[in-house]
Length: 128
Image (cartoon, rainbow, N blue to C red; front, top):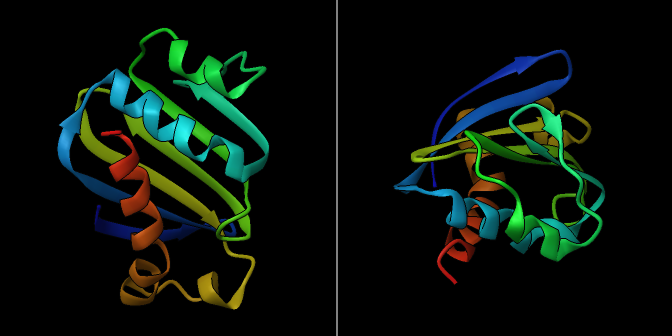
């Protein structure tokens, strides 16, 4: 994914990323499915409503909407994160809590290095 921009807001770093290609609902669901087990206290949202997800496989059968979000505490980056995918676009919004030195100062280059590989892995999972 390509980092388009970042800004700070109330203790969070808000960022926008572009996928290599625009993706549809099946790809978005696969992305959320691929990271689901790596979150604690995870929630999945269809647009802005919490979806009923009792097990990981439920993610693959969610009804199509304009956007899909996963949020919770990431076991990989070790902090709260929220990732929102938008159906039929190449846009992804990522919000990360400013809880560690790595994300305390919002710097484009540093932020990109911190999250790019993680987000690239999620993008690749869309095509499995």
